[in-house]
Amino acid sequence: MYRGKKVAVVVPAYNEEVLIRPTLESMPDYLDKVYAVDDCSKDRTGKIIRFISKKKKNTVYIKHKKNQGVGGAIATGYKQAVKDGMDIVSVMAGDNQMDPRELPKLFDPIIDGKADYTKGNRLLADPHRFGMSKWRLFGNAILTFLTKMASGYWNIMDPQNGYSAISAEAIKGINVDKMYKGYGYCNDLLVRLNIHSYRVLDVDIPARYGAERSKIRYKNYITKVSGLLFTDFIYRMIVKYMILSLNPLVFFYFFGFLMIFLGVLGIIGGFFYKYYFGGSLILSEILSLLVLMGGFQLTFFGMSFDMQSQRK
Image (cartoon, rainbow, N blue to C red):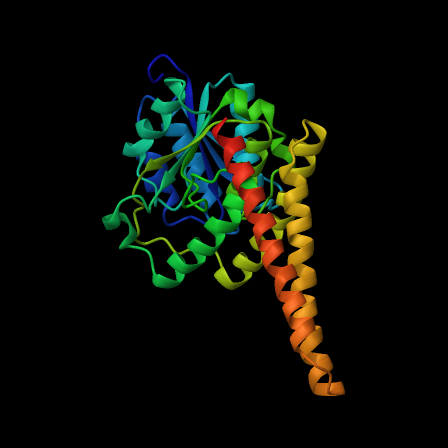
């Protein structure tokens, strides 16, 4: 136990035969359970986990018969942890990138009643950013803004950071079976937490970059997660601000997006009309620009109301 609480770690693993052993063997003794989820690996990952589970009694081997993705593996671990009566559950990747010595930073705010979900942030301190490539930083910046807007947690950074901890109550409050199965699970989880007004806190934790090789293909990843965040944003607006309550920010967002779309469409249409039919640009472009500016203004109002709602 840690500070009188039953604490556990979920380790999703897919083809991690090189790094899964040092990951599991470095787990601190105060952990009640370590759920190592083999997501139908094609290498020796499962055999290594089984071997370690015989040596370390708190290590639980879970095998997926079909590959479900990292989000699916974490959902499996979450559900088993709740079933076993754990109070707090952390997530650590199977590639030994996350330092287990940092776990108390994630556990303490939840135990102290300051948060329901804590997550690592590699960007709070300048030295922690040096290990990230420029392409990774750029992609992170794009997805950070999109995640802020989709989730409503405007104060969070580094939403792609999977090093996290969550209370058992929060796991029970959201439907983890509906959580996104791929690498965008951490972004999707933030949306689901916000709908139920759970408190999220960033924690300054550096990443360890070494022998691991990221399985993420960032071009496809950014495209997929951007689409996911758009649908998540719509889902949050409908559920939180139309079904569970009624907030005017929904209308600001709706008409803001509509006017931005019409403004951009009008500008493009104006140029098309000018060059193909010889029409005048001045009046149509001015009107389209005014509509576009009005759309941005309404969208900013929506963001402002969203930020106020989060503070409450």
